Length: 117
Image (tube, rainbow, N blue to C red; front, side, top):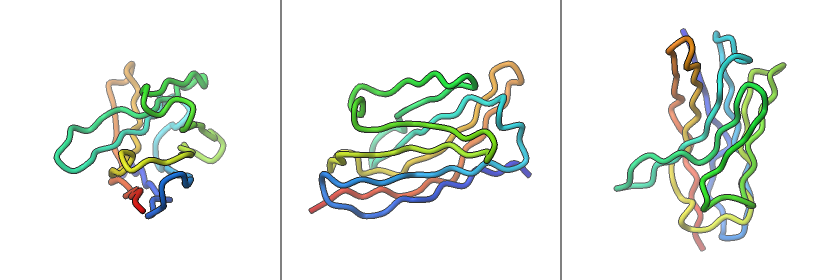
């Protein structure tokens, strides 16, 4: 079975940092665009950052300059470095794999990030 497993979420103070990881299993990872999404209580799930198969990245405006997405195809993993965290970053963060040509996408179960004093 295809599996995406996120880890690294925690409770931190404003200004702190976290590194989220997503490990993919049983998919041809290198041909999937990867993304990080987040969902706060009472809000829609939103796209945070994406990285394509060729390494091109995009970020939602609210995290530009603070978050960095990266991938390691040899390890079938994608990462999200979160710096200068703010309370409004509090959410469950989800990993997504997508291949538009194959018409397939997969989601992880999420990892909780809480930013509070």
